Amino acid sequence: MRWRRCGEDAALLDCDSLDQMRAAHATVLAARPDGVTDLVPGARSLLVVGGLAAVRSLLEGADLTHPPAGDPREVTLDVHYDGEDLALVARDAGCSPDAVVELHTGAAYTVAFTGVAPGCGYLTGLPDSLCQPRLETPRTRVPAGAVGLAGEFTGVYPRESPGGWRLLGHTSTPLFDAHADPPALLAPGDRVRFRSIR
Amino acid sequence: MRSLEVVAPGPYALVEDLGRPGYAHLGVAPSGALDTVSLRLANRLVGNPEGSAGVEALLGGLSVRFTTSATVAVTGPSVSVDVDGRSFGSHTPVAVQAGQTLVVGTPGAGLRCYLAVSGGIAVEEALGSRSRDVLSGIGPAPLRPGDVLPLGPVRGVPAGADVVVPAAAPEDLVIPVTLGPRDDWLESPAEGLSAWWTATAESNRVGLRLDGTPLRRAAGFAEAELPSEGVVTGAIQVPPSGLPVVFLADHPTTGGYPVAAVVRAAALSALAQARPGTRVRFRLS
Image (cartoon, rainbow over all chains, first blue to last red; front, side):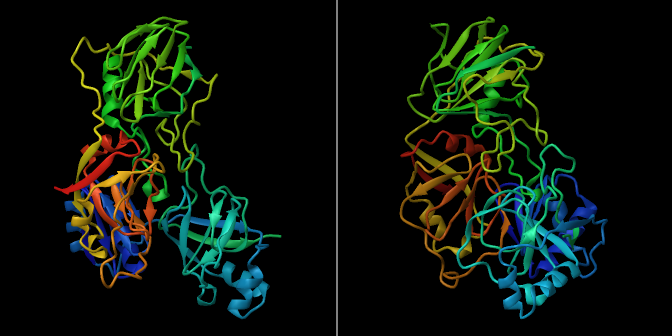
């Protein structure tokens, strides 16, 4: 791990792996040192805004191989597996579309970090055969609620946007509502499962 | 209800306060007024708490009619301010009566004018703020003719006569930065950033886009892909083109290109007033 300066009151903790980042994130979240105003997980890093001295000393003394379990929320998302790329994903995984649905609904996921748009979570825990590259040509329009995968991540597009993820299906569950509490259905650390509905 | 009606919004007028920091982990930008120094000043002039919501009017041009008496002030760059045809000028509190119309002119330099009204603009909050975030679409929509904006109750006393300095909008800006977090990804980043860059017309509340001699990736990082990581306001991100973007209040909360340096918070208000064509260089501090 390595700290990198990021302006006057923030620093980026470079981690060796996603698991190490998650452990550092869980450790800081559990202790919530004074002065920390933002804690933003990335794919291999953790951005800490405010309270830097306290976070540094907390992590120096922490056993990151046994991070605090915390109290993760568990979210189940109902998905219509009717995505445009289901056949492509099945072909590359060497199985049938039904088997892709079984694989995707059978795994347990964790929200690693967010980005792109409010409420857009990057979920880890994809079965190996579903870790597939982005589309060579991104779509100019992906509808809100589209469920897709790319690289080691799966997730849901919270609103209509361009995008290059391979689409498995869609959910009608809202991912983000600025007037709801909490506003985002998915936050870093949350556990997620997908359930197939017809 | 105290309110004002938008007669004409000018080129682009938004309701902004000091934003909604603290939601970056959910993908929500801090947003808020780009030139916070000017919004705070406008609020002080009319007796509001500094963080009250006002109107951020790109290149002025804003015209509003009041349904109530109020104290108003326009800040940002120096600009003409008329009430029912009578000239008052910016950077001073002005008492308006119900039925009167205020017209903000076009500033000769700078970019963003701020209108504060006693009681503050009291539109509904989203995530604790009334700010419009242009990237995510959170907060009140850009103002249109006929919009009626509610005003809050008046609590404070307008500031008395004072000498108030308008926001400077020089043609050349020297901006203090701290190096990192990914300066090692770029070849001679300090030297490259200290050259003159030019603000382009593609700039907006998401980022100030710069043109100049492209920065180059350091040896060993030429083809490297950066895993998505959190970014802060003021981050100078360097995309594959080598032309930097300074992230402003409505920036994406994570990004996949290296950030060479971060602008000191006190200098962000000056960048908010940088018109296309303004020359910018960065100084390590």
